Image 1 (cartoon, rainbow, N blue to C red):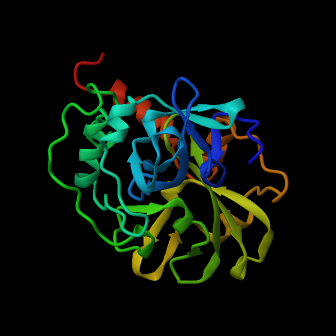
Image 2 (tube, rainbow, N blue to C red):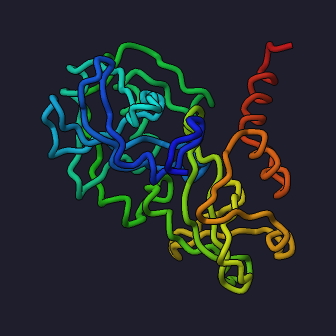
Amino acid sequence: MANRENPDFLSAGTIKGDKVINTAGEDLGKIEELMIDIQDGRVGYAVLSFGGFLGMGDKLFAIPWQALNLRVHDHAFVLDIPKETLENAKGFDKDHWPLTTREELSRTYTYYGYQPYWQTGVTEQIGLPGETIGSERMVRTESTAGRENPEFLSASTIKGDKVVNRAGEDLGKIEELMIDLQDGRIAYTVLSFGGFLGMGDKLFAIPWKALQLRVHEHKFLLDIPKETLKNAEGFDKDNWPITNREWLSTVYGYYGYQPYWQREKERIENRPGNI
């Protein structure tokens, strides 16, 4: 998991704290958090602190995931955005996080020259960073860690949450989120099944779509039959599987879900005008 032997998928815990550099290799700062779009499991945005030669360490900044490119062997992400654009970006205080809705987040995407992923299904760069932002101030709210907003939650907030079935029985908890670096979404959640299942010595890969957030209870609902969970193939805490799409497709199929990359492909192929 954390040894980075597979560059296609990394845990949210591994990504958090990674350095961010520019194309010249200069240190910009680091990734402080990943904010997850609860509706579809995408990384809505990464939260960065800009120290380094920018010297903006007292603020945090929301950056579209698609603007970051992993340099595996450097254990760093490259952010190819002009220095002036970063210096003029609107940051926010560490204790007061904005961007509680997609409407607010769309202004950030536009500022950096990216089209919001929920508008097209495919995020594409739409212009030069910083060209189209208006002077409107971002709305300030309390930290998302307080769960006042159900559209986005931090990866750190989700990790550790309880998982229950429809009867309210405790199944276990979320141990980790595995991120598909190419698609910028949760490839799968890693769950430990304690509770009445009594399978606490193993971890299990579960599709994000199988989980439903119960906001006010600070827990997730997993509506999968008990026998299916008991017969699922788990893995040891110290020996995580090498994640690839072939293995992941088997996991999704077992739980009755279609892999997200197949749905994306079908949506593109079925667009009007495509033969």
